[in-house]
Structure formats: C-alpha cells, structure tokens
Image 1 (cartoon, rainbow, N blue to C red):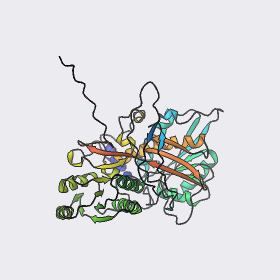
Image 2: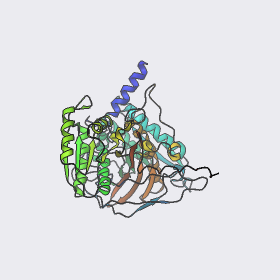
Image 3: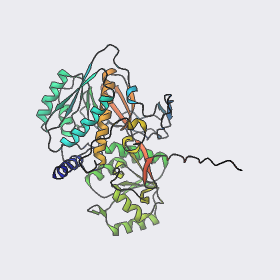
Image 4: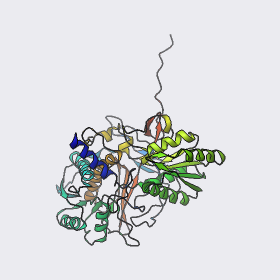
Amino acid sequence: MLANSVKLLLVCAATGMLSACSTPCDAPGQLCAPIESNTRALPPPTPLPVPPKPQPPEPVTFAVAVPDITAYDGNGAPLAPITTKPATGTPLDMPAATAPAPADGKVHHIGLLLPLRSASLGPAAELLRVGFMAAYERDRSGFEVTVIDTGDGSSDVLNKFAQAQEEQDVVVGPLSRSAVTAVANSDLVRKPTIALNHPDNRGEARLPAKLLVMGLSIEAEARQVAAWAASEQPGASALILSAGSPSQRRISAAFKQEWLRQGGKIETMDLTATNGYLNDAELVQLRARLAATPPGLLFAALDADQARQLRVAIGSDLPLYGTSSLNPGAGRGASGPELDGVRLLDLPWQVQREHPQVMVYPQPPQPGDARLTADMERLYALGIDAFRVAREVALRPNAPFTLDGVTGRLAVRFEHDQSVFERTEQAASYQQGVLGTWPPAAPTPVALPPAQ
C-alpha cells in the first residue's frame, strides 16, 4: 500500500504540471504550455458514428458553421484564417488504414525522447511512452522505435537530441516545455521532429522548419470553445467566471481573446475559492446580477466541482460552456444532474470511450488501487497520436495530411518554411449526469408490437 501511495503521489505531481489539461500547471519550465500555440482554434466536429460492418464506413462531411477563425503559430503570430469550407473524412479512421506500409521495404527509424529518469516528470513520460508503443504495436510494419531516456537538464536533452538526429529518421519529443524551448532555440533540428509540448514565447523568432509542435494546449481549447459558442450564440454577450488560479486565468484570457476577435461583448468576474469551494456570498451576488442583467451565455474557467456549485447557486437557464477542465474523468465526480446541458470540448479518448476505433487501443495501466487522473489519461492518448503523426511524416515527407485521432481531428501541413499542426477536439455535453458527444444522439425508437 505504501508503494502504491508513493506512485499515486508521483502521478499527481506530474499531472499538476500538465500543459494542456485541467489541472494547475504553475511550475516554470515544466509541462505548462504558453498561451501562444500553433494549434488552431477550430470548430468542434459533429459526433462520430460507429462505422458499419463489414463494409468500410462511408465518408462523412463535417459542417463547419463558424466564421473564419484566426489561428496562431508557436510564437503567437496569427496564421491565415480558417475558411468555412467543410472538411471531409472518414470518422476515426482505423489506425491500420492511416497510410500504406512502405512499398520499397525501407525501415523507418523513430526516436522517442522522454525524461523517463525525471523525478517529477517520469510518471507522465512513462504513460506517454506506453501510449506511443500501444499505437506502434498496432501498426509497426516498416518501422522501428527507439526509446531515448533523458533527465531534466537541458544539456542532457540537447546531447541526446543531437545523437537522435544523427541516428533516427524522425524524432518525437522532448516533453517538457523547457526542453522543447531549448531544442527550438538550437540549430540541431535537421530532421523531422515532433515536439510533445509548446516552447516558451520566443518573440519574433521563428520555429525551426522541421519542428512540428503537437502538444495539447488548454488555451487553444478555450479559443476553440469561444468560436463554437459564437457560432451557436451569434451576437450574444459572454460572462467569464473564474476562481482565479493561474491555470484558470490562462483559460479565461484565451477565451476572451477569441471572443473579442469574433466581435462579441464580454465581461469577467473572479470568484473566491477556498479549498475548492466557491464563496457563498459571492454566488448570491452573482445570482442577483444575472437576474438583473443576464448575459447571453456563461463561460466557466472552473473545475468540475466548482461548476457544479455554480449551477446549484444560479440554476441552468443560461447556456454554460467550458473546457476539458469540466471533465474530471470517470469515477472522479461530476456525475449528477447539476451539470446537465453544460457544453465543453475534450478528446475523443475521454468522450467516446465506447467507439470501436478508440477501443482498439488498450486502456492505460492504473497506479495500484487508484485511478489515473483525466489529465494523465490525456497524456496516454497523446502518445497514441504522436506515433500516428510520426508515421505519416515518415511515409509522406512534406506532404499535408489529416488523421482522426484519439486526441481529436488532426491536420498537418507545411507552408512558408514552417510546419503547422491543427487539432479539432470533440464537442460534448452532460446529459442525465453523463458526459457524451454533442449534439446528443437521438433516442432509438422503440418498436411497438402490432395491434391485435
């Protein structure tokens, strides 16, 4: 039991530094992503249907009913707007169908660079490694993966990275924000490199041409929620509610940035939270404010428990949107009717667990008697998609491609001497205490017996 407790503490510590998910990530130089991201704020796709058997699924068109959205590169500079042209593709393509095996018999070498020996990041790195290898085992023909173990120090990471650039065809990693920043600032990136986090804001400096950044980003997610809400509530005013933690301020700022870009009106209100509980007097004041001058919608930069407290205090009359921070994961609360109708974005891995093309991958190992946090589950899913992206990059150098991955709909292209990565996450909502895809599936009609 003591060993299990220690493992759980290490997992929680690493999760607390996660850049892209719901938990605070305030440790400098670790896994926190800056607010700038090269992940586009795309509108959420429609829920993905289960493919028929035995025939392959027919292509489905995802209607994009959102005005043009500004995307941001790794330095925070705006990229070309996304047009409203619908995207087409097969929902959640089976991993084995992502690309053909090499016809010439060539073996492609992929190096996975992770801080497995790190006291703080080791559990997170190991979970990502397991996800990466799970995808590799499903689609390994023509590929060999070498796991390269590093420590926390930038010098060690750069030495191992330089060696990997000599020996591997594609390098995946590093993982920590400080390590990605060190690689981005070096002149070592000569082969395709897929970073698992975002570098620090580098001002006007451009990222290396062969550096593709595919880390999860809570800020990009918040901007995507803003675009989605603006499409569903055109012209509405929004009130951002936050409990003031650093991660919540980052979420609020990103949502506000995109909402203002969409031309909407916005107000903010910081609530006081003590040990996770919102201040009762402030909730009473908020209820009176909403009754007097109700906004068009609310955006909750809160965790799931705080959002439940909010709903109990103010009711469910106003549309409420949020990020994946409102999904604590299976078995970790947030069940019950209080959050019914709340809309958010999250990874298909979290929202579509029963989809057969998510279920083809094994579930991640659990730390003893405990359960992994939702953020650690998302890291495992990132590992799966990291291999799939690396495989595509190796097979089709400098060619654009799209994948329906377990972390979202992924698109990669190469333009203006830059590698551009986009992720569209899955729209979801709480219904009858359970989180599912949005819009909810229509109920199955019940066949009545013929009249006698």
